[in-house]
Length: 74
Image 1 (cartoon, rainbow, N blue to C red):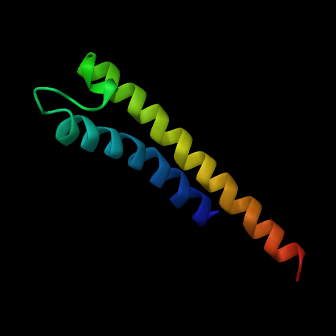
Image 2: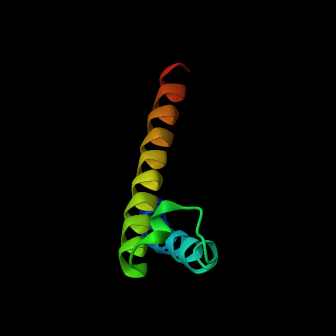
Image 3: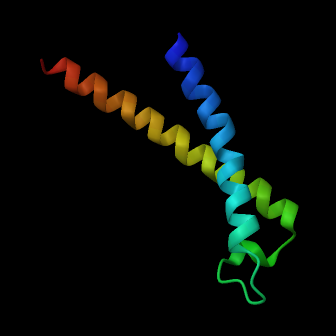
C-alpha cells in the first residue's frame, strides 16, 4: 500500500515538474525548436503535463506487466 502511495505521488509531482522544466528552460529562446513552445505558455504547460503523466503511467504499467511475467516464470 505504501509503495502504491509513493508511486502515485511521484507520478502526480513529476508530470508538472517535467512540464515546468521544459517550458521554463526549453522555450526561452527567440526561435523555439519545439513546436509546443510556439503557443500559449499555459496551454503548453498543460499539454506537457498530460503527456508526462501518460508516459509515467505507461511506464508504471509496463513495469507491473514485466514483474508479473518474471514472477510467473519462476
